[in-house]
Length: 135
Image (tube, rainbow, N blue to C red; front, side, top):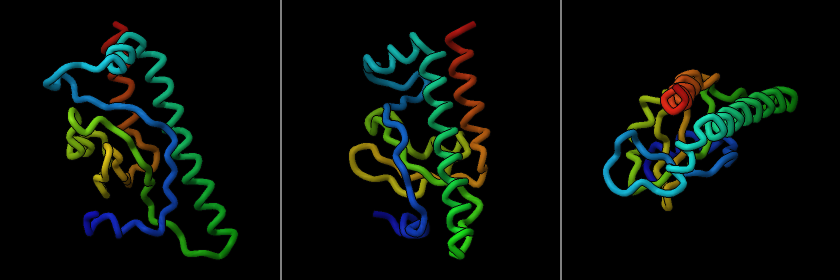
């Protein structure tokens, strides 16, 4: 585990959604899951949006709970765990989604954090994905 992953050891991380991520036009064979997601961009995009809402809601609930319990405040950064296809997605590309890579773990699990508490860049990318397959 990298040194950076220890910086956020105090944050509770919840896995709210699993799936594969592939960069647009990435090399190699496109998986059946990716093809299905492209074929149902609206449905897949809605699931992703729901996952984002869940991440944000859980983070806000945790902040409120910690305040009520008199614990120290969490930093203004939402954190979460992603699972991506490590053979076709470069975790460094998360910066384009407004997400900082905290740790790149085994089996495609990634711990990410964003100072953009509303994950607005990620929301924009999801909407672009939906729009690109539903002209």
